[in-house]
View 1 (tube, rainbow, N blue to C red):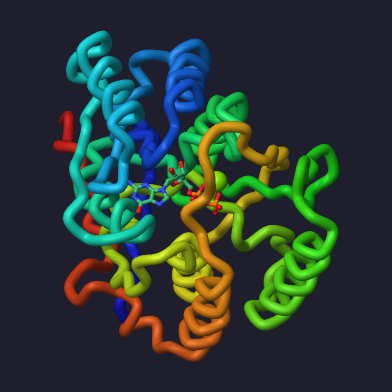
View 2 (cartoon, helix red, strand yellow; view 1 turned 180 degrees about the horizontal axis):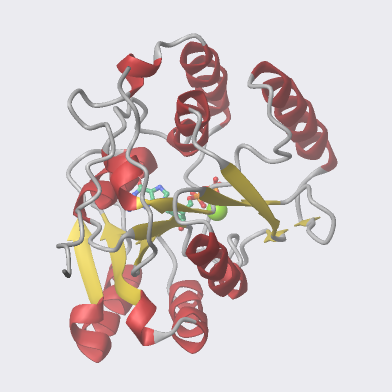
Length: 263
Ligand SMILES: Nc1nc2c(ncn2[C@@H]2O[C@H](COP(=O)(O)OP(=O)(O)O)[C@@H](O)[C@H]2O)c(=O)[nH]1
Ligand SMILES: [Mg+2]
């Protein structure tokens, strides 16, 4: 049976930052990452922009590129929406691992360093942030959304027989070859959920760390109410999909580049 790639070593990380209307939030995100992440661990900051990216936000991205040189890659996406931005970033990432996060400060950049140290200890795993673990919170999330979120999490954790408490927080570190070996489907926000359910279906181990979500203070979300329905669709479809259909054919099993023998 086809298997997913088992990455055995953490070498460096590509941090993916999709940007629409973030200026000071993007700058602050990058400042915290540069403060906390050892330079030898940081392969690149991959900023993804599109036609909807505001001129102000694009200007901050361009300035970061100017200041930080090759450490910053600014990619203009061709596929539409947030899923499209992430899918292209997955293909471009050059680190052994990649972090999927936002640039609106809703994914707390202060937790990037913890994510990396967990990935160093568990390079074959996905490390994902949870807003439902002790020590984390939702700040500025409406009560009704909180109840719906809890019901959704519990339903899908039962369906996937997992103890994970947060399946939809789009703040994770993945082995890059793993995400490059998966056949992705969604283009909108439900893609973020797809990035967890497909690995779960493949049997990839997933570890949670607590992380607080704080509502953005700059710009507005691109998510729409109707795109919530797509979460059910991808969640249910993937649960009953064959493992083989989830993998890009020929991606596995684990062709980890072998170390030349040093005899
Ligand atoms: N490049 C790009 N970035 C996007 C797109 N949609 C959302 N983003 C960014 O992705 C991050 C998360 O999206 P957001 O709209 O805040 O979603 P929410 O937090 O789930 O409500 C934010 O930093 C957005 O600016 C898109 O179509 N293209
Ligand atoms: Mg957001």
